[in-house]
Amino acid sequence: MLSARSLFQEIIDNDESFRLFCSIAAGGESQGGWENGRIAALVPETERALAPKISRHGADEDKHGRIFNALMRKRGLTPVEVPPETDYTMLLEKNGIGLTHDRLRRDEPLTVRDIVTYLSHSRVTEQRAAEQMVMLRRYFGDDPDIGKAVRMISDDEDNHLAYCHEELLRFARAGHGRTIRRTLRECALAEIGVYRDVSLAVMDHMGRILGWPRPKAALLAAGIRALYAYERAAGWRRMVSLTMPERRDALGGPSTAAPGLA
Image 1 (cartoon, one colour):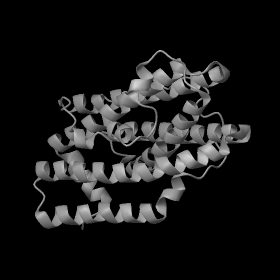
Image 2 (spheres, one colour; image 1 turned 135 degrees about the horizontal axis):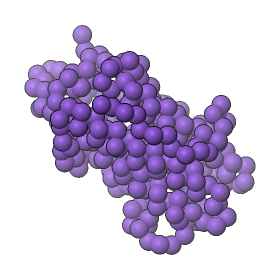
Image 3 (spheres, rainbow, N blue to C red; image 1 turned 135 degrees about the vertical axis):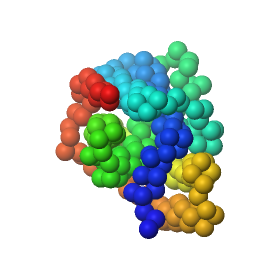
Image 4 (tube, rainbow, N blue to C red; image 1 turned 60 degrees about the vertical axis):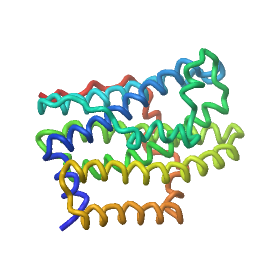
């Protein structure tokens, strides 16, 4: 029976598909680490108190990239080049989501509106990341090889999402509510399209590595498109709501160390 668990188990059990999966994940996390590091360095003077939290966010993303690379090394694997059609982070930028890399490379302070844009983008993408890690934790949280890494990354993603909710609510109270609502909606609608395209591309690569028969590949592609249709109709709304989280000041301390994976 085809299920999310059996699909991921198949990918994890094969060295080549596992290597591609970890390479894609490590690349995206490392890119997120760089972006957050640059944003922390360019925070406007009026929001300097936010800089340590943004730095913590970036440090967590860097740590996740190292974890995925360590998972590969543990199996004697080396990273592969990430196919551009599977590069979620860069495709988001091409679709106008978040702050551009060109902007972040300039040594020029960001504006408060830039920070609102960054947090809105993060609130949407961290929703996706948190949901994916909840799924992986449910299936593989007790796995002797990857369970420790999955649990740590899942906890971090929950913290990142809580931080985005809390900070956006603070900015909304300061008078940025209309901008936040508009930006969240734009980000969410763009993200679900990028997620669909990246998911189709990843499954295409995995199918070729694992030799999936055409009916199986077609069924998975249909499922991805059905999810997009649901998210386009109504599911995107879960990505734009704001609720004060139970975890307050979730990024108020230093990043935790990566687990030993040996």
